[in-house]
Image 1 (spheres, helix red, strand yellow):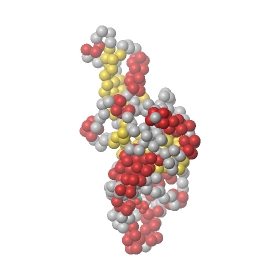
Image 2 (tube, rainbow, N blue to C red):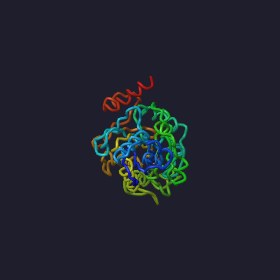
Image 3 (spheres, rainbow, N blue to C red):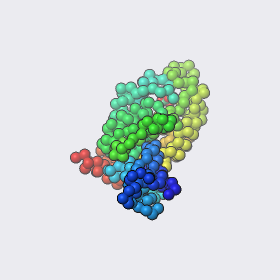
Image 4 (cartoon, rainbow, N blue to C red):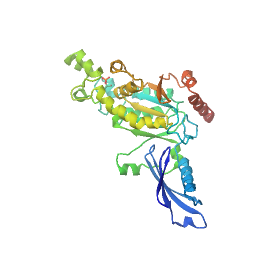
Length: 345
Ligand SMILES: O=C(O)[C@@H](CO)OP(=O)(O)O
């Protein structure tokens, strides 16, 4: 039989054909399928025995196998995993945005931009506190920037999550990195959350201000000039990116990579930066370039959105893991939390 592909919610499943191995004896045929999951960057070849002979039967078995190997949460997450037309159907999913905790250069009041600086002790504590606040909200995929302060924040926050899945950074930078970081257990995968890193979510590149002290720069160039560089929409700092330029790549990435995951029912957390998140919030909340100027984000504060019927509904920041308002708002979130309670008691 010619190789055929099958579209599963988790990725593309490719039927590679019948195997002529000893498994095809005694009327039991062996067939081989390959599953390429977008979520896990997974490229897994599986051998499965089956006794089907018709093409449709084979495809059904391939589907069953793909479902078996999926990262679907045994706690019924508020997603449409059981729906065959989940691509089109209306979903209600959670989107958490979190700016990284305080970095060593935040503490020193230095322009940071794309310089890769780690968290301070306070930043570590902020990330853990943020994790407590979202510990009852489902997370299926994590997106972070390529910078360590956002990645540390995401990882530390997930140590507090009640579902206790393991966040795993996907290494797709080369074929070797991909191959060497593969997971070969479906069960282990079910207990994992893919962490996708993307430079497009990086902080706005601050050009020749990177490494300069913010106060000293204001003293030297004037308060107004520095405020214009920091908070105007379309005026870039010397040889750096304006917020508009940062928004072009961050929002394009959100629309092309993250929004399709939300549409297929995935609950997403994005750990990123002051300006890349301001850009994304401008898109989510339909802010004008005037309105975004006054938007300020604190370090380590998670913000929750519900994605429903193609719209982003801002829910603000859960103040505590048990905040009633968040769970009262959506039945699916309340149900998820209830299942966690049942599972953990
Ligand atoms: O230095 C930076 O990279 C950013 C975020 O800390 O600063 P600003 O608040 O000026 O955009």
